[in-house]
Structure formats: structure tokens, C-alpha cells
Length: 341
Length: 275
Ligand SMILES: Nc1ncnc2c1ncn2[C@@H]1O[C@H](COP(=O)(O)OP(=O)(O)O)[C@@H](O)[C@H]1O
Ligand SMILES: [Mg+2]
Image 1 (cartoon, chains in turn yellow, orange):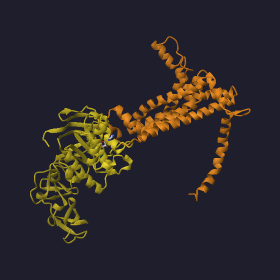
Image 2 (image 1 turned 90 degrees about the horizontal axis):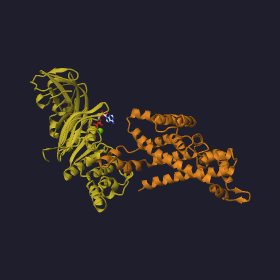
Image 3 (image 1 turned 120 degrees about the vertical axis):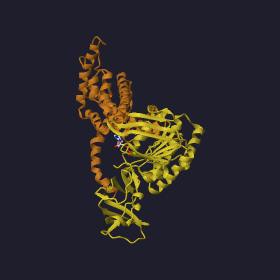
Image 4 (image 1 turned 135 degrees about the horizontal axis):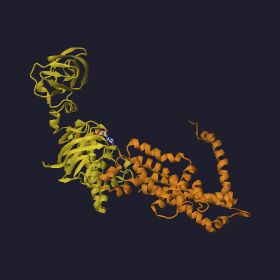
């Protein structure tokens, strides 16, 4: 992996008619990198991918790949692979012919073609399926065919749109490992889209968190997980307690509390449930919900700030609903946020 | 719903008998007319029919017009249907409405409209003379071209609708997928669109072809007795010449042509699809 940018999006703005879907997006991707585009449904992930692939006109901005401006290059000349969320296989062709589709367009045929297609199918574990018809395959198998069809083209960048979201839980884990292996083996620069933070954290070298068509934060999985820049990212990666900092006060959805300790210089603070101690501390709240989660027990407290979620060792005695308890929101255990809202 | 098949068949019997008596029997009688002679059965009437130059001409003209109208409707229809399905949903509905609208207007009215457009003092002739392309009016009416235009206009909506439904059922993103894999628009059409919409093309083609063969009003008004087609010839044989043998022969030819077209188009579709 080299540090020089391989694919750059410069001030990219994309629109459907008059409605802007992606605005002023700046992003660089290094060669060989596995980048995740993470964000809730409708934030513009698919739109961004389609524009990189040349399937969506660019309203303003530039796309540069390997030193060349490809903003106006048509989709069939970009050397970019895209695995669609719906897989978009050709139902009138066999598995073999689907994988061979792009190679045939390049004029390849005979033994050379067969060898490349077989290699592609072997990479995704479908060697025995080359004569099958597409409707005879399971969802997971169709996905592998779509992956092989893109891989054999040796694209400069391979993009996958929500590659795991249509699979059941077990297959999802299997495919996740598979994707990682394929990416490491082929060294292909890969962008994958997901709305699942667990997937992004597990797979990616770097994560781009998107929201409403703009980038909210770019960072390594560790950075995103431990140092979310905004309340939006914090919420997305499991910081369930978020408060705004105003002077020495913490402001929540329902009201505010005065913090006895000095608060850091940040727009807000965020705590994961396990970072909120229960039974001691300067604040008080009433238990409104208890749920058992194996090794731990989760409590939802009604507090002057609004609901606060804490997680404590399941071996500790259970508190009944309605009990009033002390709790703490220690500033040193919180992630400082630069931006709220 | 029914205890067994026999019971279901028994219930269907009256309707089946009715259909057979009022439909199949008369057709059979009519068609047998062409094979009956004073002393038994023969195909002599068919030989006589096809040995007449006028009949040959009308037969070939009907076939030619049917094929060209179908072919041109397929090309225009494909372009129109593709343009319509790629529209945003709101304008798509309006465009489909616009395509269907002519189907709700009587073919007589639609055909007479062409007289206004193509007549000696019609819009087209006036435009041509104003621009100076011709000195006098050009003869459009009562030519094969007029019949062609009339039939095309009459049946194009059926082709467009068939192709719209075929294109709507295309797997999502199949076309973008082909593009990204390196296909230019020509290759997208031949390798993805055409094979996946063949069924719609067959249905639309059958509708347009059989429609063109069996249309009466359009060739009657725009072609008259100068440009006879099998259908107008059939009418003439019955009402003017009172020749039921010829009429029977023409009816059978029309039926066979429709069947042949359908079978042929189906063959083409399944042969390509099972590759
Ligand atoms: N074909 C389209 N026409 C109009 N608006 C669209 C179209 N596709 C997506 N959008 C809009 O663009 C925004 C981004 O969509 P998309 O890129 O599909 O989001 P994501 O992939 O992150 O779920 C959404 O607000 C969506 O409603
Ligand atoms: Mg999407």
C-alpha cells in the first residue's frame, strides 16, 4: 500500500435533477486500500459509487484515478469494477458466461478465456458451478458470481455496494472473511459500502462515515471507534449517552446537570454504556428498564438529562424498576466530541 | 374447489358446446367452402386462386406490409419504450398514458385523421408546396405508403406497451452492470437488452403483424380499391362478387399467416434464450 492518492474525489457534487444527493465530497483512496463507506440508508453511498463508476453524471467536481481525470470518461472505459447490491447478473447466461462477459468484450476467447474464468470461479469457490444457470443459485452464490465477474476484469478499483446486507447472518460472516481474503490476495483497491458499523470496523483499513451527502469523519477503525468526531458518529458506533458541554454543565435531551469536575474543552461528551458507573457518583436516576445480556446487565435510567444507558456486570445484584440510584458520567471516561448535531 | 376433474369438466361443458356451435362450426363450414367442388374435395380452387395475378399481388402486398410495419414498429417501439422506462416515475406515467390514449379512439377516426394530413390539400402537401419542394400536390392517399403509415400508427402503441413491460421486468442494474464491464451501447443492446426482452418483442410483433394482416378500415380508407390487401379483397369478394370460395380461401390464408408468424417468432425467441 503506497501513500500516494490513487483515486481522488475532488469537491464532488451529485444530484438527481434538482435534488442534491452528495455535496462537495473530498476523498482520497490509496492503492491497495480497503475503504468502507459507512452511513445510514439514503446518505448517498450508492450515488457516490455510481459516479465513480461513471453511471451517474457529475454536477461539479472531479474524479481522478491513477493520475488521470476520469470525470468525463464513459463507464465502459473506466476500468472500475462494481458489484451491485442486487448483483445484477445476466439471467439469460450461465455462470461461466456471466464471468466471461467482460473478457469476451475485450476480444478474449478459447483457452485463454476459459482459464481466466476458471481462475475467477475458483477464487470465489464456485469451480463446480460454471454450467449452472443464474436462477438456480442461492443469494450467496449469486454474489460470488458477481464478485468473480468483476475480479476477472482486474479493475483498478473494485467497489461493492452493501455486499453483505442481503445475506443471512452465518453467510455474512463467511463472506466477510472471504472478501478480506480476496482483497489481500489480489491486492485490489477496494471500496465497500455498508450501513453496518460492525462490518466496517471488522474489514476496513479506513472508514468514511457519511451523512446526508457529506463526509462526517474519515479515520481508521480505531479512530472511528474510540474517537468519534461528532455526536452522529458517536451514536453510530455505540456511544449511547451523549451530552452537550456548556460551561460546567452537561446538557441532555430532557435537561441539564452541573458537573462537579472540570469539563474538557469540547462541544460534547459521549459515553458507552459500560463507561457509566452505577451505584456511586454525583447524579441520581430512576431505573426504568433492565435487560439481561449474558455477561452484563443493561439499565435504562430516567435522569434530569434524559434517559441514560449503563451496563454493569451481571454477577452484581439486580436493581428493580423504580429504584432510585446514584450514577456517574466521568469526563475522563468519555469521548470528547468536536461537533454536536 | 371441485371434487374432481370430471365434475369441473361437466360444468365447463355447456360453455364449451356453445362456443363450438356458434364459433367453430361456422368457421369450419366457411373454410371447407374452399375445398368443396361439385364432385368431392379438391384443392383446385386454391390453385385457381393463386394463379390469378391480382390475387398474387394482393397476397404479396399484405405479407410485405405486415412485415415492414412490424419491423419498423419494432425499431421505433424499442427506442420509444426504452426512453419511457428511463424517465422519472412521474413523467413515465404520463408518457404511458399518451401511448395508450390512441387505443381508446376509434380506428375509423384515427384513420380519417390521416386523410386530413395526407390529402391533396392536407398539411403535408401544403408544407411541401410552401417550402417549394414540389409544384403541385403529391399523391399520398390510395398508395401503399399511406396504408403503411396508417397501419404503423394504428399498431405502434401495442408494440410500445409490450416492450415497456418487457423492459420494466429487466433485472435491476443489468444495463449498468454491462456498461461497467466494458460494453458500449451497441453491445449493451445486443448482448443484454435484446436477449432479455425477446419475449416482449415476440408478443408485440405478433400483435402488430396479425393486426396489420386483419385490419380492414385502414386499408379500406387509405388504400381503397387501388391498394387492396387480403382483408379488403375478402370484403370485396363477399359483398361485390358474392364469391364465397375466394372469401373462404382468403380467410384460411389469413389464419395460417397469423399462426405462422406466431410460431416463427416463438421459435426465434426460445432458440436464442436457451443458448
Ligand atoms: N434514482 C433516483 N432518483 C432520485 N433520487 C434518488 C435516486 N436514487 C437515490 N436518490 C436519492 O439520493 C439520496 C442518496 O441515495 P443513495 O445514494 O441510494 O443512498 P444510500 O446508498 O446511502 O442508501 C437519497 O436521498 C435518495 O432518496
Ligand atoms: Mg445504497
